[in-house]
Length: 488
Image (cartoon, rainbow, N blue to C red; front, top):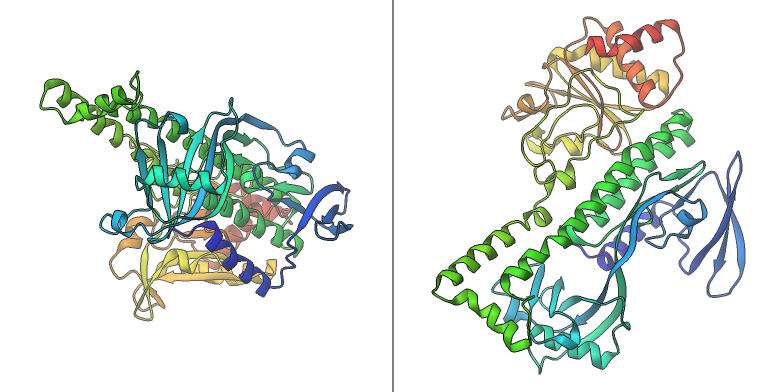
């Protein structure tokens, strides 16, 4: 679903407040000091000017691309900031006659003869159809910042739309820079960072919000388990190990997408030398019934087709694969695929992978595996032949003090694999066991059924303890730990 931040954020704020969150708008983070038992942050009320302290066990800096928290804890960064200048103009205008018959979210505008306004390259992004929009274009950081007064903003909108009489109401304007920077570590003891604070990139590929939410979910369930006494402190080490490689990939992918526009602009003729008339002639050449026109049309087609990595990169969006102390290997090699791993998403149940989406049936209605797992709980997936795992999950819950969702899939069970899709996706025997973390990622997998309930409990309990960085409590458990991969 496409939901701009200004519409999504009120929904999130309302949901957070309903669950007891103390939300303080107009509050500025100033500094912090951390010790062995917690963090003391100094904040300032920007309305009253009053400063005061907040004491907490942990501090999370989710304060954006100019994160002061990340700066204060000196997170190691790679890459560069401020590689190009851009501006946003949010406006109201009725563009129904231009857009309703060819609906889209992003309309790219390429024009010649806009020397005053840069190259004449920009996009108009839909906010609310067909009357609320955002114009995005660029400017030279080596020159003065663009004039974004109301009159000038209206002129730019009209010019880019191509309608000099368009009725326009400007809502807001802002400047921003194209960044190519990512943190290699997200933590300093009791202080963590997430979101744009640790991966700073342009909006290409639309990866920002999703990646930030993944950071939040990854860290939040681990903090919750630790604070509630359900895990060891080592669980928090897995946050950077799992999320930093994802942040790096997202930053590099978004910037590659910007670079891949250059062949489009070149083949269309937008970058041809000369004045506006000469540029327009180069653009119009693609219409000619000549060999040069034919060649240009083919070059344009290829350049545009190569943009698929920006708009269809499902591998980047969903193919995260974690390797950390919170993932227990089953000794089976991760499947290797010949297809482009950024472009194509290959579902797998390998430990460290996202639980694959499969439609199952419960109470006569379709239900996804993704709706069964998660929700702050560990889950196991098995079949009728894996009945010992269900009992093991119950016993492990009693030992560790938290609930484990049990999903037994098969005919006559609460959940059925009506079309056989789960059997094709599970990559284990029917009686094997899949242990899924609260964030929907696979923690451990047993390829085959346990021979008895004691074996199932031993192996499942040990997998949970390893995932949660809980100490092995007996020699029997230590032996079980060594047998995990052998059993799998």
